[in-house]
Amino acid sequence: MAHVETEHLTEERYSMTSKTRNILFAVIGIGLILTIIGIFQVKGAGAEHAAEHAALVSNGHEAGLTAEHHGPSWTARVWANLLLNSWYTLIIAVCGVFFIAVNYAANAGWASGLKRIPESFGAYLPIGLLFILIVIIGGKQDLYHWAHDGIMDPDSPNFDAVLKTKEWFLNPVFYYVVIPGILLAFFLFHRMFRKFSLNEDRIGGVKFFNKSVAWSGPFIFIFAFGFSLCAWMLIMSIDSHWFSTIYSIYNFAISFVAGLAAMTMFALFLKGQGYLSFINKEHIHDLGKFMFAFSIFWTYIWISQYLLIWYANLPEETEYFYKRLDGNGGQFQFQFWLNLFLCFGFPFLGLMTRNAKRNTTWLYIVGTIILVGHWNDVYLMIMPGAVGEMAGLGLLELGMPVFFAGLFIYVVLQAFEKAPTFPLQHPYLQESVHHDVGP
Image 1 (cartoon, helix red, strand yellow):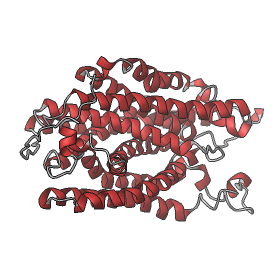
Image 2 (cartoon, helix red, strand yellow; image 1 turned 45 degrees about the vertical axis):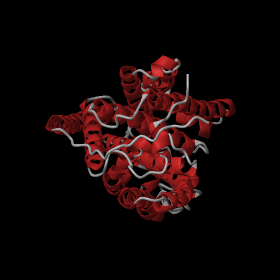
Image 3 (cartoon, helix red, strand yellow; image 1 turned 30 degrees about the vertical axis):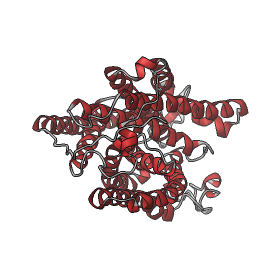
Image 4 (spheres, one colour; image 1 turned 180 degrees about the vertical axis):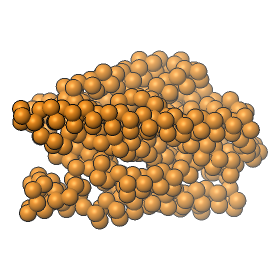
């Protein structure tokens, strides 16, 4: 084995420039303004729709029309958008903690120099939890059919026998206590890993490295079950009569590939700013390979869920895809097929070659497509069931993701400022610095 000379690295700290800070504040502000305007537009459209419906009922009484419930209100669209963007940014943040734990558990060294980037993702978790709590408290009636009055009561005219069988899970204890508790646990694990990492910098040795390795296993175990429960409760239960045993893995695939794309783009940005100078083409290549591989993994899970439901052709199974294809007036068909191109076709073809995975500009483009594609992916999971034909793509759907994107980037960069850009005392740092997978 060839001897590799130890490279002496000096501590460096990132400092967010005033230009970057001002741009992010502008993005957050523009997103917030567009969101507010979008809410008023949606409210106006909802009032207009209600008036049209009332007129039809009034004119059609003799023909037997009644003023029955005619679909979700305009507030459902607002809550659905808040859930969409809260969940999407939250699972990207959770991916950062998971990425750290997996590398510890696998005893991997190549990414140790990049560790402070996914570490900083975890700083967003309390903000993500806050937004989820707002949705849980304020949007329950608009988003979740199972939460309506009398649904679980056999003596109520609203009783639903199918949902009664799910009462052991779809209940206030899981909704108000267990789910927030799981998300809080993810944040506490992040704080613990972060504390170990900073103590390792300050004290040195392998004591805190060994603690991180020891705790990575329990976190991965808790993450597997906890993430599944959150995905089932917050997202899958929107389509309350439908269920999929692969749904939590599908959400994990979204989390991991979107998180990898975000990590890659942060790494490229920081290197472009003159930090993390030891990052070489091999690191970039490996990040590109991860994006490529997990785009294929996402597709495998997507097609597995689709084919099994298509082949069985049972009404309670096909309802999910019917809503997203022929149902709701067919308004989601274009996004449904576009989703496959954005999340699989483009990344697969765009990252197939070796040179593509090592091209900084191209990785920015592909990473952006992946992030937009999986936002659309989560949109398709939420909107058809929660909003139906009242859904759309307007200023609300433009402004809210812009706001959340700006907020996420600002929080991550601000957290990145608070520690050295790489773990100077990490036992595998030299392995990361000299990372070379060959031709």
